[in-house]
Length: 248
Image 1 (cartoon, rainbow, N blue to C red):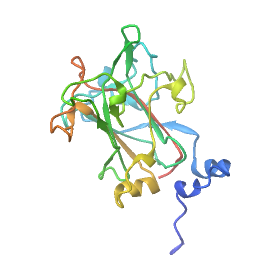
Image 2 (image 1 turned 90 degrees about the horizontal axis):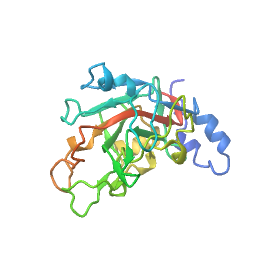
Image 3 (image 1 turned 90 degrees about the vertical axis):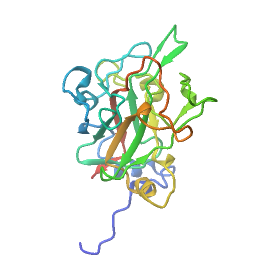
Image 4 (image 1 turned 120 degrees about the vertical axis):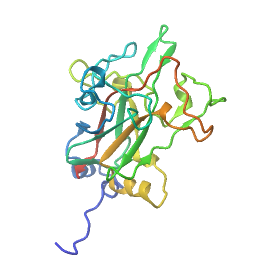
């Protein structure tokens, strides 16, 4: 009705989740977990092979720690041309609930007997309207930030650090179980309390998710693009799972 108060946000409903988690879950979730099923923008998509953006919105089919999956969409490194992908959950938004709110699955794999790791790092953005974007805090902390390191601990806040173990048919585990599923988890509580858009997303959740190949972005510490593995040609996106979903 006109003048009726706004319904409480998921964050408000879950503020006492430790004492009554069932109320929080039933109030905030329209589905336990779900993958982002809609491609909003993929300027580099060709519709074929690894250039088919729909492969990033049809679930996650990882290949395990030692190999790269084939059901992926490959980003390029040309800023604004093929370097990003925008996804959403049809008719829903991801809210800020207890723990991680979404998990990004990118095609990381181990080699050299498991002692080395191939990574294509990704910067993650979220938005309520698809126009104003808020990046997740991220920082490359190598002693020399102009040189690439394959140590995932140095790439704080980036996606593309952990192998993908989840497979929709062959290993249908909980996407939010990092040990069993792999992937990189993100929590909206990590966004800054800026009194603006980031704070609004923490309260209300987000609708749109943008994944950007890190080497197409400038590192503010150096003024140059983030470094990459010499053989890297862009991140391979397998999919994104979210939870605490509510009608948009």
